[in-house]
Image: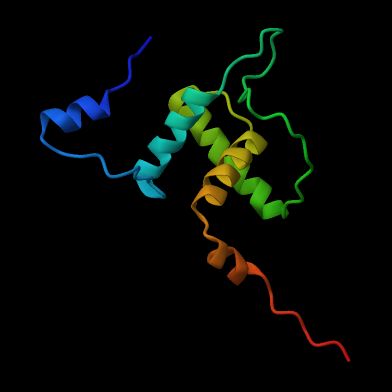
Length: 120
């Protein structure tokens, strides 16, 4: 089992102070962060079956456009090919949804809403 880095110890040795968490959002580093999240969070259930995040206890149907599902399928296939991590398109969607909701502020969320038309 691979041991993680002790960032507090590293910062202290360098005479630095940790200021917060930096999240990669796109490109190569974003993809590597996503892969690290998958590897760290997904576990095979004790009774067998597909690996999943044990904290996912809610099940909901999420409507998707066909092109969105196709893109998720492409991304999941690339992850499976390049890293030998078994992930399904909707598992990838759940991870991306969690990451995005953690990064979006209330003000940004309000901008997503379409202005209501005045009723006559």
